[in-house]
Image (cartoon, rainbow, N blue to C red; front, side, top):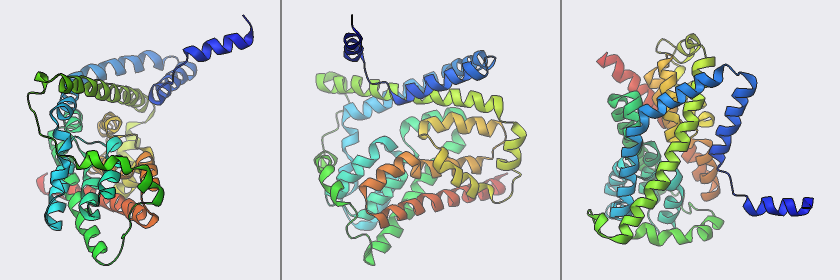
Length: 349
Protein backbone atom coordinates (compact mmCIF):
# COMPACT_ATOMS: atom_id res chain seq x y z
CA UNK A 1 0.00 0.00 0.00
CA UNK A 2 1.38 3.38 -0.99
CA UNK A 3 1.40 6.44 1.30
CA UNK A 4 -1.25 8.08 -0.88
CA UNK A 5 -3.52 5.02 -0.58
CA UNK A 6 -3.03 4.96 3.19
CA UNK A 7 -4.01 8.62 3.45
CA UNK A 8 -7.10 8.00 1.33
CA UNK A 9 -8.07 5.08 3.56
CA UNK A 10 -7.71 7.18 6.71
CA UNK A 11 -9.79 9.96 5.20
CA UNK A 12 -12.53 7.52 4.21
CA UNK A 13 -12.83 6.30 7.81
CA UNK A 14 -12.40 9.68 9.48
CA UNK A 15 -15.22 11.49 11.27
CA UNK A 16 -15.51 14.92 12.83
CA UNK A 17 -14.44 14.78 16.49
CA UNK A 18 -16.61 16.69 18.92
CA UNK A 19 -14.76 19.76 20.20
CA UNK A 20 -15.83 19.13 23.79
CA UNK A 21 -14.62 15.52 23.61
CA UNK A 22 -11.38 16.72 22.04
CA UNK A 23 -10.90 19.27 24.83
CA UNK A 24 -11.49 16.53 27.42
CA UNK A 25 -8.93 14.24 25.76
CA UNK A 26 -6.31 16.98 25.50
CA UNK A 27 -6.85 18.04 29.11
CA UNK A 28 -6.69 14.48 30.40
CA UNK A 29 -3.52 13.76 28.42
CA UNK A 30 -2.03 16.97 29.82
CA UNK A 31 -2.75 15.77 33.36
CA UNK A 32 -1.18 12.40 32.60
CA UNK A 33 1.88 14.07 31.10
CA UNK A 34 2.57 16.75 33.71
CA UNK A 35 1.10 15.31 36.93
CA UNK A 36 0.74 11.54 36.82
CA UNK A 37 -0.29 11.30 40.47
CA UNK A 38 -3.32 13.51 39.78
CA UNK A 39 -4.76 11.09 37.19
CA UNK A 40 -6.36 8.60 39.63
CA UNK A 41 -7.58 11.48 41.82
CA UNK A 42 -9.27 13.15 38.86
CA UNK A 43 -10.80 9.85 37.72
CA UNK A 44 -12.22 9.16 41.18
CA UNK A 45 -13.57 12.71 41.42
CA UNK A 46 -15.08 12.48 37.93
CA UNK A 47 -16.83 9.15 38.55
CA UNK A 48 -18.15 10.22 41.96
CA UNK A 49 -19.50 13.49 40.54
CA UNK A 50 -21.14 11.79 37.56
CA UNK A 51 -22.68 9.19 39.86
CA UNK A 52 -24.17 11.91 42.03
CA UNK A 53 -25.57 13.95 39.14
CA UNK A 54 -26.80 10.99 37.05
CA UNK A 55 -30.42 10.81 38.37
CA UNK A 56 -30.83 14.56 37.87
CA UNK A 57 -29.32 14.25 34.39
CA UNK A 58 -31.86 11.58 33.44
CA UNK A 59 -34.74 13.72 34.71
CA UNK A 60 -33.44 16.71 32.74
CA UNK A 61 -33.23 14.66 29.55
CA UNK A 62 -36.79 13.38 29.97
CA UNK A 63 -38.11 16.92 30.45
CA UNK A 64 -36.27 18.20 27.37
CA UNK A 65 -37.48 15.32 25.23
CA UNK A 66 -41.03 15.69 26.54
CA UNK A 67 -41.12 19.40 25.75
CA UNK A 68 -40.11 18.65 22.18
CA UNK A 69 -42.41 15.67 21.67
CA UNK A 70 -45.55 17.26 23.11
CA UNK A 71 -45.10 20.44 21.06
CA UNK A 72 -44.69 22.59 24.16
CA UNK A 73 -41.58 24.22 22.72
CA UNK A 74 -43.64 25.52 19.77
CA UNK A 75 -45.97 27.61 21.94
CA UNK A 76 -43.61 30.58 22.13
CA UNK A 77 -45.58 32.48 19.49
CA UNK A 78 -48.53 32.83 21.87
CA UNK A 79 -46.30 34.62 24.38
CA UNK A 80 -45.61 37.47 21.96
CA UNK A 81 -49.22 38.35 21.21
CA UNK A 82 -50.89 41.36 22.82
CA UNK A 83 -50.07 44.75 24.34
CA UNK A 84 -46.37 45.68 24.47
CA UNK A 85 -46.08 45.82 28.26
CA UNK A 86 -48.02 42.60 28.70
CA UNK A 87 -45.81 40.99 26.07
CA UNK A 88 -42.68 42.02 27.99
CA UNK A 89 -43.95 40.53 31.25
CA UNK A 90 -45.07 37.31 29.56
CA UNK A 91 -41.81 36.99 27.60
CA UNK A 92 -39.63 37.52 30.69
CA UNK A 93 -41.53 34.93 32.71
CA UNK A 94 -41.66 32.47 29.83
CA UNK A 95 -37.94 32.96 29.18
CA UNK A 96 -37.05 32.26 32.80
CA UNK A 97 -39.05 29.01 32.77
CA UNK A 98 -38.76 27.88 29.15
CA UNK A 99 -36.87 24.81 27.88
CA UNK A 100 -34.73 26.96 25.57
CA UNK A 101 -31.02 27.14 26.40
CA UNK A 102 -28.30 29.49 25.19
CA UNK A 103 -27.45 27.19 22.27
CA UNK A 104 -30.96 27.47 20.78
CA UNK A 105 -32.02 30.97 21.76
CA UNK A 106 -29.92 32.83 19.13
CA UNK A 107 -31.60 31.43 15.98
CA UNK A 108 -34.92 31.66 17.79
CA UNK A 109 -34.34 35.35 18.47
CA UNK A 110 -33.37 35.86 14.84
CA UNK A 111 -36.59 34.23 13.70
CA UNK A 112 -38.73 36.33 16.04
CA UNK A 113 -37.13 39.60 14.95
CA UNK A 114 -37.33 38.62 11.29
CA UNK A 115 -41.01 37.79 11.77
CA UNK A 116 -41.66 41.32 13.02
CA UNK A 117 -41.99 40.72 16.76
CA UNK A 118 -41.18 43.98 18.65
CA UNK A 119 -37.66 44.20 20.04
CA UNK A 120 -38.62 44.91 23.67
CA UNK A 121 -40.38 41.60 24.45
CA UNK A 122 -37.79 39.75 22.39
CA UNK A 123 -35.06 41.32 24.53
CA UNK A 124 -36.94 40.32 27.70
CA UNK A 125 -36.99 36.73 26.49
CA UNK A 126 -33.43 36.99 25.16
CA UNK A 127 -31.95 37.98 28.54
CA UNK A 128 -33.98 35.66 30.76
CA UNK A 129 -33.99 32.50 28.65
CA UNK A 130 -30.27 31.49 28.82
CA UNK A 131 -30.21 31.95 32.60
CA UNK A 132 -32.64 29.20 33.52
CA UNK A 133 -34.48 26.25 32.01
CA UNK A 134 -36.04 23.11 33.53
CA UNK A 135 -32.93 20.98 33.03
CA UNK A 136 -30.69 23.62 34.59
CA UNK A 137 -33.11 24.08 37.50
CA UNK A 138 -32.85 20.39 38.38
CA UNK A 139 -29.06 20.17 38.04
CA UNK A 140 -28.44 23.46 39.85
CA UNK A 141 -30.70 22.42 42.74
CA UNK A 142 -28.68 19.25 43.16
CA UNK A 143 -25.35 21.10 43.34
CA UNK A 144 -26.04 24.48 44.96
CA UNK A 145 -29.39 23.93 46.65
CA UNK A 146 -32.98 24.87 46.00
CA UNK A 147 -32.75 28.35 47.55
CA UNK A 148 -29.91 29.44 45.26
CA UNK A 149 -31.74 27.96 42.27
CA UNK A 150 -34.94 29.83 43.08
CA UNK A 151 -32.97 33.06 43.54
CA UNK A 152 -31.33 32.56 40.13
CA UNK A 153 -34.73 31.91 38.55
CA UNK A 154 -36.13 35.10 40.08
CA UNK A 155 -33.04 36.98 38.90
CA UNK A 156 -33.59 35.69 35.36
CA UNK A 157 -37.19 36.92 35.30
CA UNK A 158 -36.39 40.28 36.92
CA UNK A 159 -33.49 40.90 34.53
CA UNK A 160 -35.76 40.00 31.62
CA UNK A 161 -38.34 42.52 32.82
CA UNK A 162 -35.70 45.22 33.26
CA UNK A 163 -34.19 44.53 29.85
CA UNK A 164 -37.60 44.54 28.18
CA UNK A 165 -38.90 47.77 29.70
CA UNK A 166 -35.65 49.73 29.28
CA UNK A 167 -35.40 48.56 25.67
CA UNK A 168 -39.03 49.56 25.12
CA UNK A 169 -38.25 53.07 26.41
CA UNK A 170 -35.24 53.38 24.08
CA UNK A 171 -37.21 52.11 21.08
CA UNK A 172 -39.88 54.74 21.72
CA UNK A 173 -37.09 57.34 21.53
CA UNK A 174 -36.03 56.14 18.10
CA UNK A 175 -33.22 53.72 18.91
CA UNK A 176 -32.78 50.22 17.48
CA UNK A 177 -35.20 50.77 14.60
CA UNK A 178 -33.49 48.08 12.49
CA UNK A 179 -32.02 45.59 14.96
CA UNK A 180 -30.83 42.87 12.56
CA UNK A 181 -27.80 43.12 10.30
CA UNK A 182 -28.51 42.88 6.58
CA UNK A 183 -26.75 39.52 6.23
CA UNK A 184 -28.57 38.17 9.28
CA UNK A 185 -31.94 39.01 7.75
CA UNK A 186 -31.09 36.79 4.80
CA UNK A 187 -29.27 34.07 6.70
CA UNK A 188 -31.90 33.54 9.36
CA UNK A 189 -35.05 34.10 7.33
CA UNK A 190 -35.80 30.39 7.40
CA UNK A 191 -36.23 30.44 11.16
CA UNK A 192 -39.29 32.64 11.26
CA UNK A 193 -42.01 30.20 10.22
CA UNK A 194 -41.19 27.64 12.90
CA UNK A 195 -40.94 30.19 15.67
CA UNK A 196 -44.33 31.60 14.78
CA UNK A 197 -46.06 28.26 14.56
CA UNK A 198 -48.70 27.37 17.10
CA UNK A 199 -49.00 23.61 17.02
CA UNK A 200 -51.37 21.83 19.34
CA UNK A 201 -49.89 20.35 22.51
CA UNK A 202 -50.30 16.58 22.74
CA UNK A 203 -49.40 15.35 26.21
CA UNK A 204 -49.76 11.63 25.37
CA UNK A 205 -46.99 11.88 22.77
CA UNK A 206 -46.04 8.18 23.04
CA UNK A 207 -49.23 7.26 21.17
CA UNK A 208 -47.96 9.02 18.03
CA UNK A 209 -45.04 7.44 16.17
CA UNK A 210 -43.63 10.74 14.95
CA UNK A 211 -43.78 12.38 18.37
CA UNK A 212 -42.31 9.29 20.02
CA UNK A 213 -39.41 9.38 17.57
CA UNK A 214 -39.01 13.08 18.31
CA UNK A 215 -38.82 12.32 22.04
CA UNK A 216 -36.13 9.69 21.50
CA UNK A 217 -34.09 11.92 19.17
CA UNK A 218 -34.30 14.95 21.46
CA UNK A 219 -33.46 12.87 24.53
CA UNK A 220 -30.37 11.49 22.81
CA UNK A 221 -29.25 14.93 21.68
CA UNK A 222 -29.85 16.58 25.05
CA UNK A 223 -28.38 13.66 26.98
CA UNK A 224 -25.17 13.68 24.98
CA UNK A 225 -24.91 17.47 25.16
CA UNK A 226 -25.30 17.53 28.95
CA UNK A 227 -23.10 14.49 29.55
CA UNK A 228 -20.11 15.72 27.55
CA UNK A 229 -20.18 19.23 29.04
CA UNK A 230 -20.66 18.01 32.60
CA UNK A 231 -17.86 15.46 32.17
CA UNK A 232 -15.47 18.17 30.98
CA UNK A 233 -16.60 20.48 33.77
CA UNK A 234 -16.10 17.83 36.46
CA UNK A 235 -12.59 17.16 35.14
CA UNK A 236 -11.83 20.88 35.35
CA UNK A 237 -13.33 20.99 38.85
CA UNK A 238 -11.03 18.16 39.93
CA UNK A 239 -8.07 20.32 38.91
CA UNK A 240 -9.52 23.33 40.71
CA UNK A 241 -9.78 21.29 43.90
CA UNK A 242 -6.23 20.04 43.45
CA UNK A 243 -4.45 23.26 42.48
CA UNK A 244 -6.45 26.24 43.76
CA UNK A 245 -5.85 26.89 47.47
CA UNK A 246 -9.13 27.33 49.37
CA UNK A 247 -7.70 30.34 51.18
CA UNK A 248 -7.19 32.09 47.83
CA UNK A 249 -10.86 31.71 46.94
CA UNK A 250 -11.93 32.71 50.43
CA UNK A 251 -9.76 35.83 50.43
CA UNK A 252 -10.66 37.14 46.98
CA UNK A 253 -14.09 35.68 46.21
CA UNK A 254 -15.40 34.80 49.65
CA UNK A 255 -18.13 36.18 51.86
CA UNK A 256 -15.67 38.39 53.74
CA UNK A 257 -14.30 40.07 50.61
CA UNK A 258 -14.78 43.74 49.84
CA UNK A 259 -17.61 45.18 47.75
CA UNK A 260 -15.58 44.74 44.57
CA UNK A 261 -16.11 40.98 44.74
CA UNK A 262 -19.35 41.20 42.76
CA UNK A 263 -18.07 43.40 39.88
CA UNK A 264 -14.98 41.17 39.74
CA UNK A 265 -17.15 38.06 39.50
CA UNK A 266 -19.09 39.70 36.65
CA UNK A 267 -15.88 40.60 34.80
CA UNK A 268 -14.46 37.09 35.24
CA UNK A 269 -17.74 35.41 34.33
CA UNK A 270 -17.78 36.63 30.74
CA UNK A 271 -14.47 35.09 29.52
CA UNK A 272 -14.38 32.12 31.92
CA UNK A 273 -17.95 30.87 31.42
CA UNK A 274 -18.28 27.70 29.30
CA UNK A 275 -22.06 27.24 29.31
CA UNK A 276 -24.86 27.04 31.84
CA UNK A 277 -24.42 23.34 32.50
CA UNK A 278 -20.63 23.24 32.64
CA UNK A 279 -20.65 26.21 35.01
CA UNK A 280 -22.75 24.40 37.62
CA UNK A 281 -20.10 21.98 38.93
CA UNK A 282 -17.34 24.57 38.49
CA UNK A 283 -19.17 27.17 40.55
CA UNK A 284 -20.18 24.46 43.01
CA UNK A 285 -16.51 23.68 43.53
CA UNK A 286 -15.67 27.35 44.04
CA UNK A 287 -18.47 27.72 46.58
CA UNK A 288 -17.16 24.67 48.45
CA UNK A 289 -13.76 26.37 48.59
CA UNK A 290 -15.17 29.60 49.99
CA UNK A 291 -16.71 31.61 47.16
CA UNK A 292 -19.71 33.63 48.33
CA UNK A 293 -23.16 32.83 46.95
CA UNK A 294 -23.73 36.41 45.67
CA UNK A 295 -20.43 36.13 43.81
CA UNK A 296 -21.49 32.78 42.39
CA UNK A 297 -24.81 34.22 41.22
CA UNK A 298 -23.07 37.20 39.61
CA UNK A 299 -20.60 34.92 37.82
CA UNK A 300 -23.36 32.67 36.45
CA UNK A 301 -25.63 35.52 35.35
CA UNK A 302 -22.84 37.49 33.64
CA UNK A 303 -21.55 34.42 31.85
CA UNK A 304 -25.00 33.12 31.02
CA UNK A 305 -26.05 36.30 29.24
CA UNK A 306 -22.84 37.48 27.62
CA UNK A 307 -20.29 34.66 27.54
CA UNK A 308 -17.81 34.78 24.68
CA UNK A 309 -19.56 32.11 22.52
CA UNK A 310 -22.95 33.78 22.98
CA UNK A 311 -21.52 37.25 22.36
CA UNK A 312 -19.87 36.12 19.13
CA UNK A 313 -23.20 34.76 17.87
CA UNK A 314 -25.03 37.95 18.85
CA UNK A 315 -22.35 40.11 17.21
CA UNK A 316 -22.98 38.62 13.77
CA UNK A 317 -26.75 38.77 14.27
CA UNK A 318 -27.57 42.33 15.34
CA UNK A 319 -26.31 45.83 14.61
CA UNK A 320 -23.45 47.31 16.63
CA UNK A 321 -25.50 49.61 18.87
CA UNK A 322 -27.85 46.79 19.90
CA UNK A 323 -24.88 44.50 20.53
CA UNK A 324 -23.35 47.05 22.92
CA UNK A 325 -26.73 47.45 24.64
CA UNK A 326 -26.97 43.67 25.02
CA UNK A 327 -23.54 43.56 26.71
CA UNK A 328 -24.48 46.43 29.03
CA UNK A 329 -27.68 44.67 30.05
CA UNK A 330 -25.83 41.46 30.83
CA UNK A 331 -22.97 43.06 32.78
CA UNK A 332 -25.02 45.59 34.77
CA UNK A 333 -27.81 43.09 35.35
CA UNK A 334 -25.42 40.51 36.78
CA UNK A 335 -23.94 43.07 39.19
CA UNK A 336 -27.39 44.18 40.34
CA UNK A 337 -28.37 40.54 40.83
CA UNK A 338 -25.31 39.91 42.97
CA UNK A 339 -25.86 42.97 45.16
CA UNK A 340 -29.56 42.15 45.45
CA UNK A 341 -28.75 38.64 46.65
CA UNK A 342 -26.15 40.04 49.05
CA UNK A 343 -28.71 42.39 50.60
CA UNK A 344 -31.22 39.55 50.84
CA UNK A 345 -28.72 37.33 52.68
CA UNK A 346 -27.84 40.13 55.08
CA UNK A 347 -31.50 40.56 56.03
CA UNK A 348 -32.21 36.82 56.20
CA UNK A 349 -28.95 35.84 57.87
